[in-house]
Length: 91
Image (tube, rainbow, N blue to C red; front, side, top):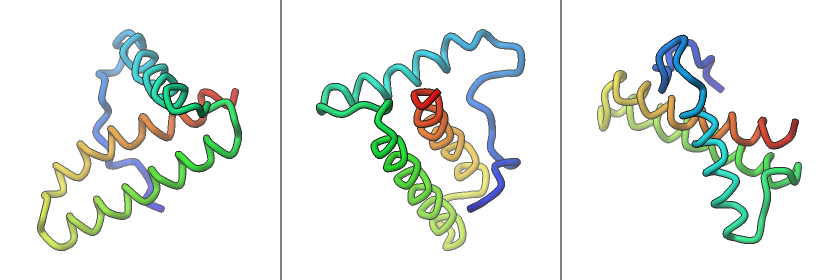
């Protein structure tokens, strides 16, 4: 898996984390809508795997010229929110 040093953050440093909290809660709400919960370790692990696969797809798309590195990095920021959501609901 890539080191996420190249990921463009969704929020500026020092910004209120309310936006991130909202997105993390939205992930959970969507899972609840489907009768699942990110508080379940298996469900959270499954989300991490899905985000890993999306990362692989983004890297492949970039490698083959379908998207630019900048586009990949911007999309990787969105993928990271999924990872964060999986981790947050396991705390």
